[in-house]
Image 1 (cartoon, helix red, strand yellow):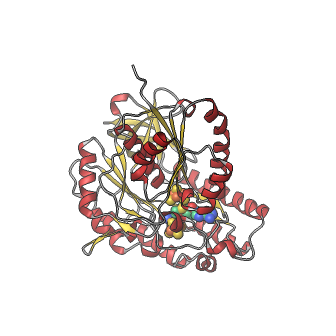
Image 2: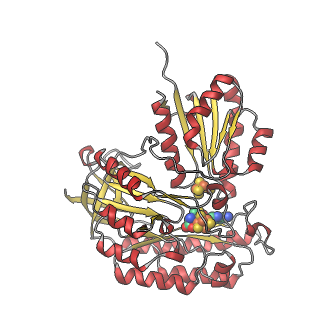
Image 3: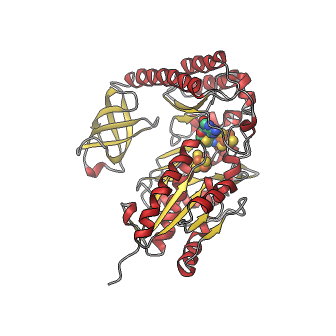
Length: 440
Ligand code: SAH
Ligand code: SF4
Ligand code: F3S
């Protein structure tokens, strides 16, 4: 009997990439491939890359180097895609230093992957096909979901904001929104397939414009009516156009989880201007005030960059004071990383690495202290939790997410997976909660 061919995908970067990898897996499943848990045993190995910071680039190149030996020892098709491939200097590097790569494609043409793979296999030579920008949105691609009960749904692609530090507008192209009816159809299909929670994806979901009558809030109201769907989340929203209408949607739509990831990047209005974020510290704090006034229990997370060119000690302290004022439930903190081709690459006053690290450590200490305090205050509360599966800790421990997106571990059983259960919080740690089920 002929052995079934296998694949392995390594994904770097954000949910957009994770979802693209689900699509790649779906297309390979349609071709009869099976997933291999081990990269070293797979027939087709894919790296879906991220370019947002330098360390993502480095990790990728490191692994690519290691694959040379394996590639020599057996038949294997090595494919690379994702945001890094949208940069010519990266493709040039791969051609020069890693000639053992077989297929290179970009973020705009993942739908072509099956053909590209076929031609690489048939012609036994390297295939490179990267589109500079996105064409028409391709609907109806398959996806092999990572989770049974929750799913990612792209609602828009690309970004028009050009924050001066960021590579994404160059790797993902201009904003394009999917039609509301296509999104609705997909969500209904997912629900029919057992999905209870959807996360709407886009670099800046509140720029969504499905048609003249449908902006992002309209889309939420529409999806709130889908029978069988229990939870709606979204990632990411930009403070510059977080509307009152969206805040009202939290009040009106019971399926919209009371959680928002609202990247602030920095607490100094001068630096925010240099970053081209289009809001001030005061604008941002006002949004937080409005959100909390409308939805008192809302949980809030953010992204922060430390050491943007020209950031002074005082300006960094403004970030610390903003964090202390907002009291985030959690925050992703990043060292500023120079990205080739972005305006900030050329800014003078790049901050020395040791200064960046020193500020970064102070920020992380504060963020963690606040997270721990916030989580401790949950003890005794009963939270609705969508049970996801085993937690990594022990065999009887299950984990899930609260409405406010907090990770919680508790004793459970297999039959609860995919259900929403009530869990009483018994302990709060820095990055998660512990709890016990009180009733189904
Ligand atoms: N579209 C999203 C962000 C996507 S990138 C938004 O605007 O909210 C995710 C995060 O990576 C950003 O929020 C930012 O904090 C960080 N980031 C982006 N470019 C970076 C860079 N050059 N150096 C360090 N962090 C960066
Ligand atoms: Fe990057 Fe800014 Fe676009 Fe977010 S909004 S993807 S940070 S350019
Ligand atoms: Fe990275 Fe591309 Fe996402 S650069 S963060 S994978 S959009």
